[in-house]
Amino acid sequence: MARVVAVCGMPGSGKGEFAAILDAAGVPIVSMGDMIRAEVARRGLEEAPHVFGQVAAALRAEFGEEVLAVRLCDRVDELLESHALVLIEGLRGTAEDDVFSGRWGEDYRTVAIDTDEELRFERIQRRGRSEDGDRAAFQARNERERGWGLEVLMNEADDTITNDEDLAQFQAECTRWLERISS
Image 1 (cartoon, rainbow, N blue to C red):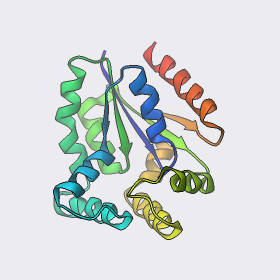
Image 2: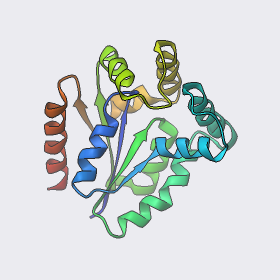
Image 3: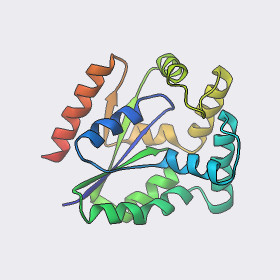
Image 4: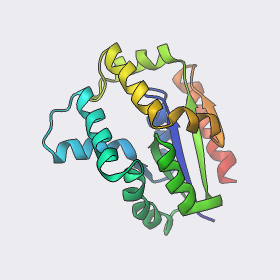
């Protein structure tokens, strides 16, 4: 039986690290954040923290809260033809979750990565992505994603992995999770 898993978490929580573990195990990854980064590039816009948020909000305003999920579904279905598990990285909104659960039903589940806010900010400062910024940008991004329903998703996730320890411990927990879901 093929399954779809979507990982959610606040900015800097460790969704990318979770995806890297699954990727190393041969699980294909489809990133919702990559869709926004590609849209920013397609529009020829400056890669600045506020720009990514503006583009994400503009897409949702123009095409509906579920726009990214709808655009992603066919690609996930293609991957399911040759893989038993596909990961959607970066689930952020309840409208997206509704699309995915409606599409794959019982073959769909969510995983929340829960991480202390101060630790998330420290990690964001170290990783240096173009969509990251200072404390004000971090807080604005947190609030924007909460507005899309991210906290609801995290509270209602099928599984939760806490990422408040070191990287090796988090990686080990992700590996144990993958072993459980794959059996």
